Image (cartoon, rainbow over all chains, first blue to last red):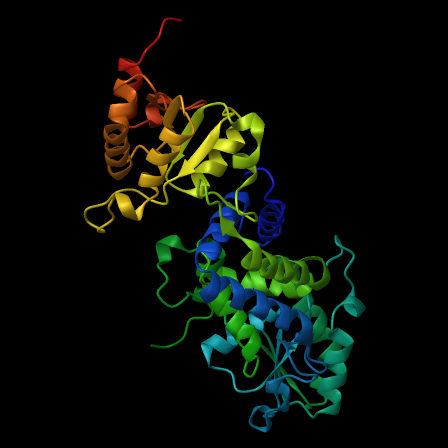
Length: 203
Length: 203
């Protein structure tokens, strides 16, 4: 970094704090933006300022958007009695890219973790129970990550919903586990293969 | 991406245009920034807007800074009669990180390239010749990349400076080629090994 260009140094330091960028790629990105000032740098500065001002968590599901209640929660077509529970907004976006789910979501904001001292009240779990009871939800689809913490959280939520499930008010399901589309057996871990085998279906 | 969050989608699309980021890492970066709004996102938006407004090429050497003439060109201690010629601002920054050079720079802004139709007048070559003649430069250090285009450009510049060099006004040098510090021979290409061998020195 050349002497005296303090502003540029500060920008590089900020860029280097983004996930996926280090000091070297931050420098490259900054030089690239300076070369594309009108087409990229100025619009990006404006867009960042707008999103920083307007982005907010949906009061109902925890999705990130620019309204008090997100577009999915206010879309009447999506009020089909299904709620898909995900850990994080990134997972909600991934589900939406799949275009296979027509209901609403509930973003927990993490997983239970004894190690990190995260309990049910630190997540949006009480709010989920409330939504299920109040909105007459028929199915809760647990789409948590297939990690230890994800599965622990899924079991905890299933336990909390068990009284309503026993009375037949709500069905609790989870995503199928198996071979990913395009996946090669040789590259899959043993756990996935044995899960796919025990959940095999007639061809 | 969830429905309706147009601003956030636009921000992700802009971020994905940065070198080193794709759609996936752009989404991650945007979610990370939304979580660190006050500490990262707002300062980054301001910093980008400031640099987009203030960044400019130094009229003398082509370095990027925020003044008409950069801090290196105006620093009297660096007027030691040496000019280091580099292709790009990123190379100037790399030289500065090495902290080994105490003179000034000249940023060409690229290399000669018949294929891409880049001639001497498209680079800052005429301006370099002018600086060398006018400022009583004693040494021009060619620090161009060890690529075909870089070396072609180095030879062209050496040819342009040859009349002044013959009269003894200016010495033309280039960076040494050899084994990088910490480099293992087994991982080096043949060209580097043979260059290092022919430039061997007594131990």
